[in-house]
Each structure stands twice: as C-alpha cells, then as structure tokens.
Image 1 (cartoon, one colour):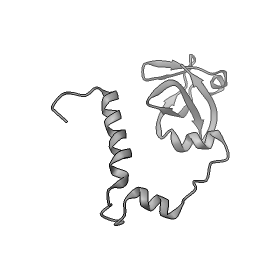
Image 2 (image 1 turned 180 degrees about the horizontal axis):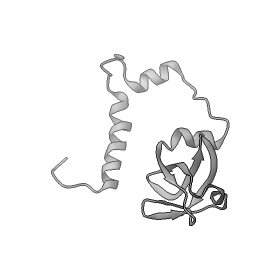
Image 3 (image 1 turned 45 degrees about the horizontal axis):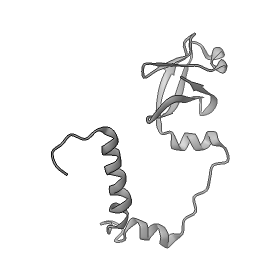
Length: 119
C-alpha cells in the first residue's frame, strides 16, 4: 500500500479483505493451526440467544451512559426519542449502538431493554 491517506470506508474494506483472505488462512503462533482450519475442525455451531434484545447486547458492544432529558437522549450530536423514555427523565441509562448506524440506539436499564429510540 502506498503512502496515500485512505478514507475510513477504504480502510474498513482493506481490513475486511485482510481478515477474510489472509488472516483466516495463516498458521497461528499459539494454536499451530490456521483459524479457519481450527474452526472447521471443531464444527462449532454457535447457540443463538433466545431474543433479539439479548443478541443486541452481544453484538452492539459500543455502549455509553446517558441521562434521559425531557426531550429524549442526546448522543453524538443527535437527539433520540421513544415514548417509553418519559418515565426515565433525569435517570441514568445505558445505550447500546452500532457506530456505523446511528439512526437508532437501544436503551437499557440494569440490562433490561427499555426501548429502541430513534434519531
């Protein structure tokens, strides 16, 4: 790769390409096997969570604490709202979000889903 500055999307594509086409097939120093061979050898079938809310807790690893305001939740320069938030005004909650898609956030209190608030 030359010394040109990549845009974020280009960098993401380069990383994906490296992981998919190189990393999975190179012998790992600790296991002595390529990650793809090790995965296929054990034929692991992931167990799916029993609800979409639990799946999002696993996948949406980016999270932040916020205080619910009268007009919703302010995050990343946006305002998010859902009617369920009204009873939480002034309280601290945890939001989970996809950094690549800030059109909605998942709002939790003590690991219990309150709502999916939209921008």
